Image (cartoon, rainbow, N blue to C red; front, side, top):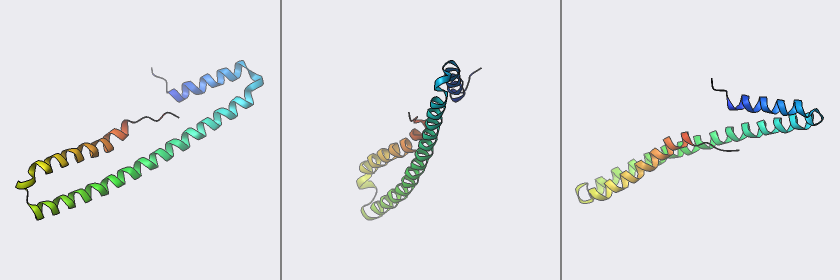
Length: 108
């Protein structure tokens, strides 16, 4: 059975408080402040990630519009290699933004 890391940390902190009762109030206040800071950081990082993804969506729309304009203006066949390179690099960047951000773990 796997124990949640927060539960493990909470139990360890209470065990330390039990061993050193003269520091109980200070340790509890410090632990409470640490939890509040971590929660605030997670909320803010979630907001930032949502903004980045929204900006990525807008940039994808702009990229598609500019690509369509360039193809209409200059043709596909003359610039196929350039379009392939640009689309590949843009696609890699977009995939990294959408999938890579999900796996990123912030240490507080």
